[in-house]
Length: 351
Ligand code: TRP
Image 1: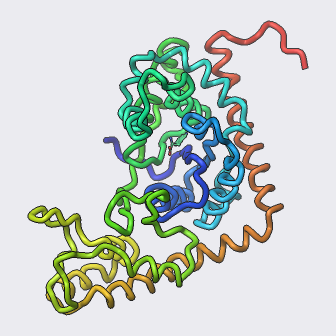
Image 2 (image 1 turned 30 degrees about the vertical axis):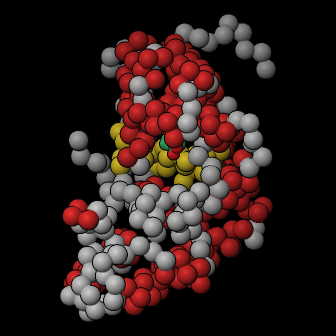
Image 3 (image 1 turned 120 degrees about the horizontal axis):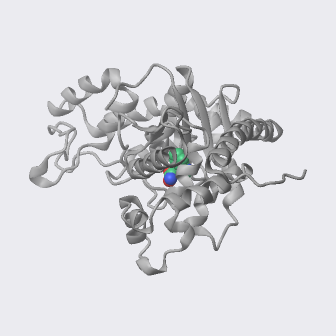
């Protein structure tokens, strides 16, 4: 791995699944905000066309989910003055680049992408029934990324195979159509979040459909109620039993979720809390109370900012309109280059 430069340029994207939970925040959004604050150029895209790859029949939620997610982005601290926030389907260049790049990658390569294979398995699909659009998921993602010619793509672990395809396509394009010293596309690097995945309250993978989440804009009362049900250590029956913050393979204990959240959101106290727990001096009930307080403090400002944006929908629309303009400008410049290098400029361009 090469060293991460002090500042670079990123394209980040998420499919619009509606309101975000803490897993989305820790896995991605928090990192986007950090990079923005460190002075990186940041394009943040709502990947609404990608939702169609698995959900093209019912599109009734698409706009509402986009809206809810953008509110959460703003709430989490994406600053529209510094980050270009836009929706994929508003920038048609994504479709054009997707088509052109789709020529540079084989069907076999796309079929081997582990993320896609997993998705097919999770949906209980037969590989033969996958749509042409779904098979091209990675190619559309490559177009999303390469249009903005970023140096890095901040993603969760599961997205790394898509970024790998993006790099291959960039390399192929540069090799075929560019003089060696004038590549059009930098090969963007996947920037995987350091903390990794935050587990759900039950210790399993956090997912809205399972109901084991804390939402980003959750109310303190709700937080307390949810944390009360969190998985701790099943062998710690009474408050003065010694507990096991860490995983223990001997009985398949995956590690205490409350401690995982302390480590993430209450790092300064986490070690002391673990020591107390192991010694049987801290019971789960008290520990959970403490975590609820921490979470309410962390999420309070986010919830407030969300409410402010939600009360001013015109301002949110302005953010998206302005972001779309900026994204289009960048996309247009890339497409000029791509068409000219590839030799697919039309002979006449009537207005
Ligand atoms: N595949 C990504 C996800 O499921 C969403 C996405 C689409 C994306 N285009 C992107 C992420 C470009 C990063 C860059 O989360």
